[in-house]
Image 1 (cartoon, rainbow, N blue to C red):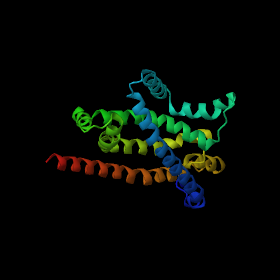
Image 2 (image 1 turned 90 degrees about the vertical axis):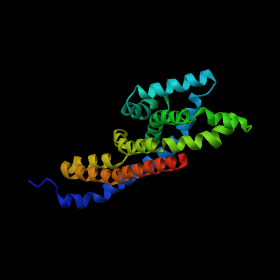
Image 3 (image 1 turned 120 degrees about the vertical axis):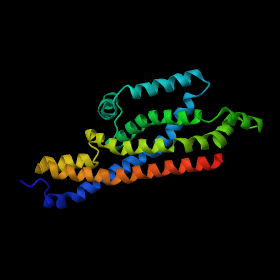
Amino acid sequence: MELLNPEIAAANIGPLFAGLVMTIELTFVVILLSLVFALLVALGGMSRFRPLRWLVKAYIEAIRGTPLLLQLIYIYYVLPEIGIRLNSFVAGVIALTLNYSAYLSEVYRGGIQAISKGQHDAAAALGMTSGLAMRRIILPQAVRIVIPALGNYFIALFKDTALCSVISIQEVVFTAQIIAARNFQYFTLYTIVGIMYFTVSFPAARLVGYLERRMRAGYRRKLR
């Protein structure tokens, strides 16, 4: 019996590629939203306003304490029971953004806290407010520190979009499921899907590694 069927592969490469495009589109939308929202969450978590810190902590712990799959199901299938109805793509974007923002906020926080107190003191000596110092001095340095970690999270996000098949987003895994239900060519279809994921993930991982090396080299040059 032939496991990898070239005819099936050729006949279905178009729909599978369209699913891959949807996967990449979903990933980029969530990346853009998470980068902004996670920073706001991180800053809120370091705020002097105690209720805001508690609210941020509760949000992060709630996300960490529940699986992403449940969060997707809850937003798409449970919220309509209280009158909140979202299409599958919007529900997927919201769930992924909330999930990844919680984790990325901790990455941001670690990067900000890694900046030495002397930087804050120098900004204060120049007459900068804390907000101005954060924007002009602290955040630019913190972002450079956290770029490798952010890159790794975004590679994981690209693969986690497969969970969105549970809410019928027509990404590549969902597309393969629909086709396989008709022709039962699971080996061929899911092998193609695996190759597609690897084709995107591997170069992305190498890019993250390259950026990390560049950041380290630049930091060493500044220390000389």
